[in-house]
Image (cartoon, rainbow, N blue to C red; front, side, top):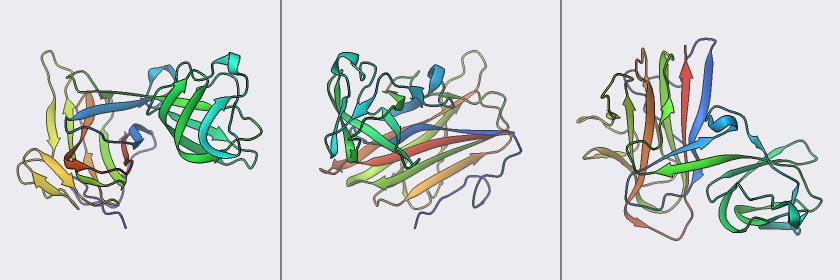
Length: 244
């Protein structure tokens, strides 16, 4: 059962006013570096709070498969798709299915992290993952929002440790990243404080940090692994919720 630590006050879940929004830094992300990496999962208009982007053409599989292709090869349906992007397909049952791209063979073929049956061809949508290790990477705008909540879920994987930290910055000239969690004496919830990061060693662990009365202009979350990364693909989902 997942447990969460909520910063400043202990609460079960965030309580916001009537105006709120949520987005993702990552969805089912495969952590593959010991270097702190910052990501954002963008929707329509490059907005992490935007809806899924309409994909071109239709996509299909041969039975239940992790290999997904365009129904019409000439459409080059995956031209704009890269590893880490999230595909959304609604089947005839009306149920939405999400799949993460793990490899791209061509503009007409990608591999996803788990099998899906699209035998009869389907329209689709997607969100774009962009990641980096620089000072300008991974920021989501929080200006004008009173409450900021940052959450990391270590859903699956076999890392020696998942190392995370949370940062925000103000809008003033010269403002830079400030680590808002963990602090020098943070207990990291299910995890363990190690220097400037919280380390999680067991899938199913997670942490959520709430900043009430926020005056920050943007926030981001760093992801890395410590000691080792086994052969299992990780599923790390990190989210942001804003309220006022």
